[in-house]
Structures are given as C-alpha cells and as structure tokens.
Image (cartoon, rainbow, N blue to C red; front, side, top):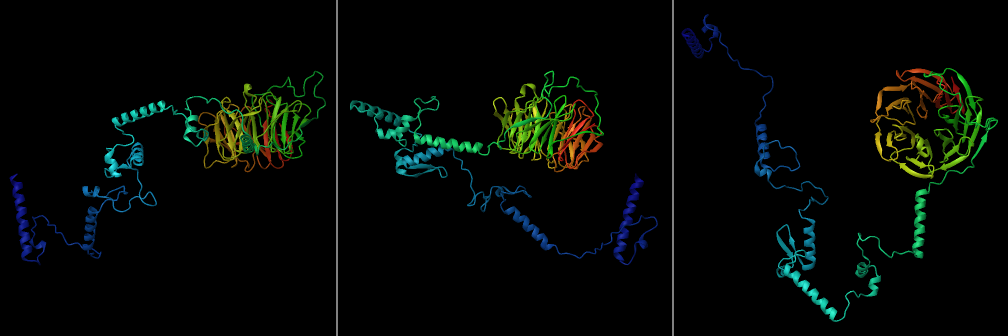
Length: 586
C-alpha cells in the first residue's frame, strides 16, 4: 500500500511540473517535457464545425414568452389535453368568448329547476302577481301582494287559510239550501254544448269505470256517409293494386288413351314395382328421351314426389304439362289457367295436387288427376316462388315469395293470409325449409339471405356481405346439413344449416357461366354430386368432396335453366331450357 501511495504522489508531481513548463514556454512540446518513465498525457483539442453559427437569442426569448403566456392565459374549455401544469387561477378562470355554440343565437344549457317548481312559480305569478326568481334569490312582480300573502304559493297555502276556505264553502252551501237553490242546476244550453265545462262534467267518466252505458246505437246520415267514404278509402289503400291478375278460364286437356285402366287405377297411380336399384348415383352420359310440347321456353321441371314416374313442366307459353316417364314418354295432361308465363311449380307431398305461380299475379292450386283448379290466391303482386310446408300435418300452409319483398303465408282451408314476413328489400327468389321444417331460408334480389322461424315474422339470422351477389336458386343437400346457393358471380356457395348458418369457405363450385340467369342447382339423391345448368346450355356436374368438375354435357341451345335428378333411378337426370325442350339423360 505504501508503494502504491508513493507511485500516485509521483504521478501528481510529474503532472504539475508538466503544466508549469507549458505555462512558462508556450512553444515547448509535450515530448520535450515528458520523461520515458512518465505516462502519456491526453490533451483536449478545440473542435471545429462546418455549420454556420446561428444567433439563438431571439429564439430563447420567444420560447420564454410563449411559456409565460401559456401560464398566464386561461385554458380553453374545449381542449382535451393540457401540455403544462396549470395554476389554480387558470383552472378556475371564467370562460371568455361565446364558448361552444349549440344554438345559432348562442349557448343554450339546461336550467337546474324542477318541473314542479317551475309550474308552482308560474301559476303563483298568474294568480297572485309575484314569483320567485331562482337566479337572484328574490321575488319579482307585485311586491305588495307578496308581503300581504306572506310569500305563499298556490301549492303552499297555510293551514288556517285552508280551514277558512272550508268554512266559507259550508256557509255558502247552507245559505243555498235555505233559499231552495240547487247547485246542480245549470243552463240546458251549456249541457248540450260540448265546449262548456258543464258538458264535460256530465259526460266525463273515469277510464277505469268500464264501458259507458247508453252508447249511440244508430248513426246519423252524415256519420253513415262518412263511414262509407272511409271504408272505401281504406279498401282502395289495402287492395287497390290487389286486383286479381287477368282472369282466364281454367281448363285442362287429357292426352292419354284413358284416365283409368282396366283395373280402375288412375293414370297418376304409383307404380308398384318402382324402387331404388342402387345406393350410389352415377353421372349420366347420353340422351335417352326428349319431350317437346311447349312453344316457348321451359322455366322449371319437377318429378313426381318419391317415385318420379311423372314429370311436371312450367312453360313460358302460359301452359303447364305433365309427362309420362316410365312407360310411353308422352304428354299426359295440359293445364291452362294462366294468362302469362308460369314462373314456378311445386307438388304437395303425395303428388295429388300441385301449385303454379304465374306472372299474371295468380297462384293456382290444381288437382293433378282431373286438372281442375281447387283454389286461387293473389295479392296483386307477382309470385316468384311458391312452396308448401313439408310437414304432413301442415300441407294446407302455402308460402309464396312476392315481387314486393314479402313472403306471404296462406291457410288453404280458409283462403286467408295468416302471416306476412316482410324484411327483405327486394323481390324474394327462394324459400327453403331447414332444421326439421322449423325454420326456412329465403334469398332475395337485395343480395342477402335471411333465416326465419316458421310462423314468426322476425328474422333470426341476416346474412349480407359486401362481396355477396344475388342468389336466385338454393337447394338443400339430402343430409340437410348444407345449402347450395347459386350465386350470380358464376359460383355455387355452400352454407351450413346449423345454428350459425355460416358460409363454408372450403367448398366452392365454379367453372360455369350463370351470370344473369336463374339457373337452378340440385343435388344427387346420395349427396355425392352437385349439378347446375348455365347460360350456354351446358349441364355441369361437380364432386361434393373434392369440389372438382366431374363432367359437362351440352344439353340445350341457349340457356339450360332447370335440372332434376330422378328420385329412384340414380343415374338419370332431366333438364329443361329456354329452347322449349325437356331432355332425359342416362
């Protein structure tokens, strides 16, 4: 330790000597004064900068002035951030200027006065001539009356004043009884005049008193005339455009040999030997048969439920035809009852009845066997889609999607509208029952999907995205877990039918050209294939699992609008197009 201390003292002495030598001889260098044993000395040389020198005196004064001004000026009440610590005087300084103008004439704010207090002072002023001024804690108006009344209000009468009034009333009543006067006696003209207080006292009755007795039973001539005009006006508002579509005589023509065979069975009788031959479906390869009877395009086709031995077609030539599939392959009956093109058709569960929706604003229920019209429904709007509730106990419930954005529900037994579902913003295109027929999904021209509880006109799920297009056709997969929707951006989208009704982004079927056409989409009975027509007359088949195109068939000249897979013969498909033909493929 002593050696270290001596070494440190020696270094200090050497530094002092070096400094003294430098002070005495400015021209001397460090190397002249340093010895070999001493450590090197570090000198701080002056730094040089290439930037010009700026006089920041004024800048410092400006910053100091702003700082002082910030601490002296009041705080703006509208600002949200204060960048310095304000003083007490600044925080509680009065607001200068107009402040936040919430009215074109200035600033309006609520006065802290209760409505009861206001009414009290208002009525006191009009009765006694004075009232309390809440802003200055004094009274305004007639101060003499204020002193005489001892500053009472209309709601604050002293007790001795109340007793005095009661005594005066009793005295007046006794005097009137002695004089034989009747207080209830009033001028009869006042009783008959509804503008008088006497009429109000006589006719007024508490709202809790029940029905008023002695109501007017007969209307005057003027009242009758007004009631008729009002009823007429309301009828025009409700059914002004509900005029039924063009009335056409309903008729039907049978084209077969005989309506009943030698055993007395009807021509629509179910075939006894018809049953499914295979569990797997196969893609058809060749054309088997062509039905040509419509003079214009065919808009929809439907196989007879469960058996498919007949096929129903809706034509744009206003006619509906039914064709034999199993035997002769000929047209069996033509149904004529619409004056314009038929838009949609639908069978009931047993096939004995079917429904047609036409552009003549009529919905007709037909007897399949006899061709007679059972009933006609209309709201004055064009029905775009018609469906029956699939439940066996609800085969009398008819739903129709209309051009006026409504889904209308009829009870066919009474012919009355029992419910209207009105939430869409465009014409309704499809109605599809899901979830064991407790709910149904609708699509519309407003590019949205809506899910409804059956019988409740409230949307439980609303699906609308900016990238969505209109979906004019929707089909339910046989296992009822998925919906296939034909989107007008040339793709088929898949939606879940469970609680969320979400879009399945992994499944998308594309390749066909369907933009601008309501080409119908359909599933094979086993759910393995998805098929759809397109605007070029082709029929497209996709594999459900891989979403790849399995096969395409050139079916029609023009648009291939409809397609149906046979319910029993799993390799046969029927298609229809705007060329007026119905083709059967195997």
